[in-house]
Length: 387
Ligand code: GLA
Image 1 (cartoon, rainbow, N blue to C red):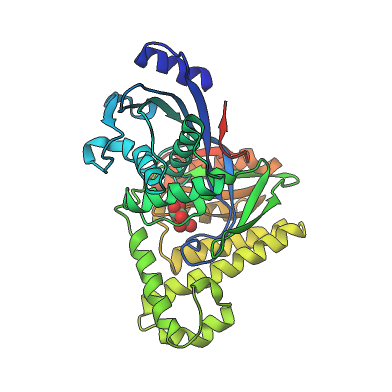
Image 2: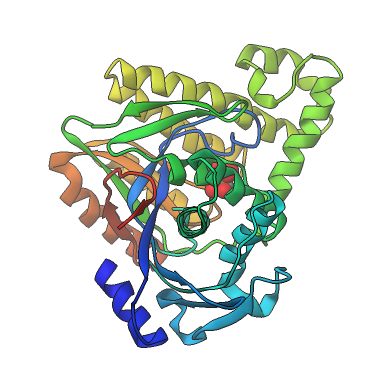
């Protein structure tokens, strides 16, 4: 990949003198979905796939960006002066948003850059191609301009830019997973205070398989922000009867005792998911620590049911993938992963069943949905790096 982006850089910008190459990963979330903006826990891990950039500073203020994933758009040119979101800027609104967010924190870029990008995460698949691009941009700016920020800052800056420059009100999970990834480990993150611990996710005799439904989601236009608002309203209603800061503060029992304060059936379901999913995540990590992968898998299945029925962020195609996966012997757990409304599922599959899983599920998906599913046996990788 390094050679590929360098070669493209030379082709587009003439030569590669003084160019550096960077990488930041995508992520898959094992459990803890739609809890990160509710003060709950998440359990994602960084992948070995992600986004690569070849970049160098310029002598003037120009920004010239080219993505091999959007090659038809060619070089998109703008400037570091007066950064603002623009429709014509297309995908460059993501890196520009991060530059803008650095400025908001008082880090001024002294000059422009030429950048070539290439990612191997399928777009809109729920594996955080945008967070990896944001963390990559932050990591690159830190290296090129010596900005004094930690990797957690890179995650926060990425999230801030996505919320305030790109209009997607995401939580911190994706950027955190990308910026703080650690090989063979998932990150047990408490989003209420950003405390975290790494938990080894080396599954004896099983693999993590990501299945892409190839139903693309478009988050800014989706119901993601609506879900967030529903949770906020439910929280305000609950606050009238119980002293909490976030939905993640409640146990299942406390929720059941106070839920009548929420004056709408749909909002009750949304809040129920947030509370139960947070507790499930805590239980799942405890199970994993005891090597109880079976229980971990069962909790993944329950997570899917809750996302399907209460949070309503699944879709027919993804339900087919998950429900058919559950029928295959050797599948320990399977659920939708990421924001939802399409995208990918994550499954834990016994080694000897992986081939059958791909074959059977691929065939039944084709038959029932009429689409092709793509399968990736994923490895858990590190956070961003300079190559
Ligand atoms: C998206 C958001 C995350 C998180 C997930 C759902 O990936 O970017 O912050 O809310 O959806 O768990």
